[in-house]
Length: 188
Length: 119
Length: 139
Image (cartoon, rainbow over all chains, first blue to last red; front, side, top):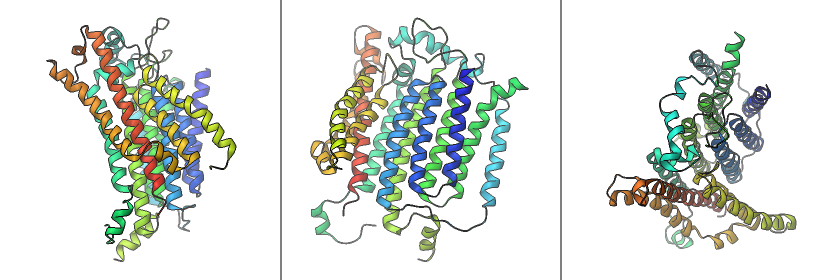
């Protein structure tokens, strides 16, 4: 019963924050609300028994993403979204309603939330839960699957992070003073 | 009927969140707001996956002697990778916004289109 | 920010504990929640706090940008190196069971080493991205 209440409260927080992000015009307030959104979703992950995911979401979403957005706001020096006195955008609203209706129609067939006999809990998951400690010696099943059973995917993930670092470096690195004095033609 | 709603309300609220993020991306012109909407969309997709892996009256998938039932660890692994890839994409998108501001002088979609069309 | 005494002293008190917690999360990732990614992000948060309070120039004297570039590639190299070590010892790529005498010890060693590689890469990339964003503002 208390689980249900916490669940509903956190989901209500998330909904209110998302709608506020749509409606508010001050960009600084939007970035702060985005941090709150990430932290509430981390709380929801804990309620749903996903400790590693909550850890990562709180650190990455409420930490790194918010800090980078604030840095972008400081660099672009824009405080408010431009207000246009336009009428309500009909086409995006229509697209969103149709897509939402189709998705809800799709969720009518999903097994109930928390069902232990759902197809998602058969085949591979019991194998990992039963055999991981004797095959890898690591009690944290998520780390065992991430690092040992699905180690190839984690290699791709590390490469993606490295590529993002290289990409930001190519976009944002300042030329050193020597290079700036040498050539003055604009970089395209 | 009540059982059905209790078992599915989670998914419906997540779909509403997804559509809120989607609406922000396609209807607002400010680039930073678009990135915020994209992140809302991503987080709601993660919520959907973790809800699918949840098992009632079970605990976190860390093997301990006192517990017998554990939640499904596979969605946790998928979403861990997805969160990290999401932050990489966000960082690159924000770097692009900084460069766009330096090149066009504005981060509103309409001003950028005007400048592009007038070339 | 340099002139605000409370901020400076609080940051000085907190940063060692943040780094310690990051190391704890890194190496106890197999017994509790945690692992390479979380530890890398927490480690970078300590350095971002230092940069925010003491300024970009001081922070770049502590860790210059070229060290961060080398460390990022070094982390990926550790990961791939563990995989190739499995190849050289006669098995497949990323087979950890061959790294020690007993397969379980080999698996444990393999998991620890690759989590270390992941942590190093994530920490250095996050700090590098923040330094690049902060350094773009000055002409």
